[in-house]
Length: 177
Length: 177
Image (cartoon, each protein chain N blue to C red):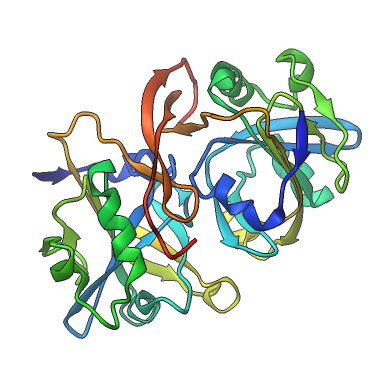
């Protein structure tokens, strides 16, 4: 069950570098791609940058609609994440093919992914680095997290289908975010 | 023992989103800061983007020298990473204070960090996003990895000294990097 999540804490979800699914919708066609090339850019409002290759079908949807959902899958979805990355949205409806459930978002036309631990509704706010680096800057305008999941183990891709899964958590005293 | 590491595989080190230490040297003073806001931008030559706040002492060194080393610590160094982030290089020599060993790099003036699993020598190649986002684009020109360490467990920061440590590794069939 996805619950409201404070925008000021979004960095805590993205800063650890999880593989995410970028969900878009263009002309009524929802689509998904796995993405690891993203980083936080600002705490509040939460902003992130990400690289989406022009070779990806999602590139056009992101560029034209300027909207996306960043969904954070956990380890149970690892096999699905790889499959999502190995076919193109040009050829298949990935939600249907991989039995993922699109849910309506509140602020964007792209869908949430019900099976994911967290979903971040995003608007593209800067496209000036798209030409040079395929880099989009997004602002997170609404965030959802499934709080019933106490130890979500996210995935960290190391190339060619090799993933490290979140292990132990340690807590140290720190004065800073 | 740091060994040469292929530049074309550097993305496998950074894409999983580990906390890194950004090492700089300015006017003979080496400095360090922890950093989680970074992402890959290009495979070859390997390029990355990172955010370094103007409030950080490292910002000036990075902007003026246009050189840095990105060192990747493992879980054993977690307490040190937090301490490195809680003091300023304005006030202390962090290498000395935290008993870290600077080693000469080959291509840049910033030091390698001997205790880290991997060290990436970087040159700043684009400062056009510094004004707006404090974003630097770096090219990795030389990479070193301690290959004697078979299961390096990197750190993933979730805010205020909370880290997730790398856990299990899974391997799935994938056609793509």
